Image (cartoon, rainbow, N blue to C red; front, top):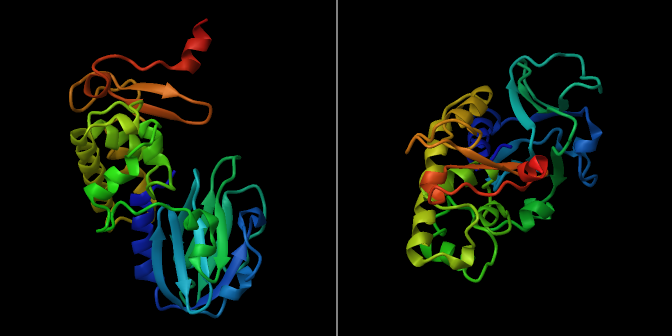
Length: 288
């Protein structure tokens, strides 16, 4: 799933290439991705892109009329294209969900695509981004100057949930998902199962420092890359996430995994859990 660093990079790409240009056509291919009907998708046509912003994992294309807001979900992606074909795309079984064409003879714009059968890509046309329910409930952005150690500590106070889940909760902190929460906790040398309310001041400070360093490093690595290279950069920058069975780059221990119904987490026992593997209930059931 694209998370804060990747959406931040896509925001920069669109700001550079689309800001100040007029939208000529917006062509829906998979109608199911459109989550609003008023204003209609066609209301974007003829308006000029004035700014591009990020709200957590949401991408916001602002015009001098309505906003086009996109959430890429688990398998969605944005592909910038020069020389889009003249013929309109046809609905079918392919990954293309929506095409936006900018005015001009070069026929540039972007495609929104989504792989797989579990569809989650969401597109909204709204007068104000706060009309999108997912944006309205977002917690603070961890890259904002107001996201201080004191603010972070206040978010954790009295929260009796595992720190892994707290970091992923968009209503607590905006933009962090499964991958970067694994990376943050590995950098902080903390078990993903620790309760947020049980953390000491020193541990909270450690997670806060790891959070900022991990996200800012990922944003910096992604800066200037083409959209097609962002996924490769994300995978290459991971120390534990997606690296089950491989050696931890810090201590050399084997990276372990805990599986859930529709996701998994990765961690290093030596760095994070005092050498003790966490129980994987799915695997335990299979062994019975």
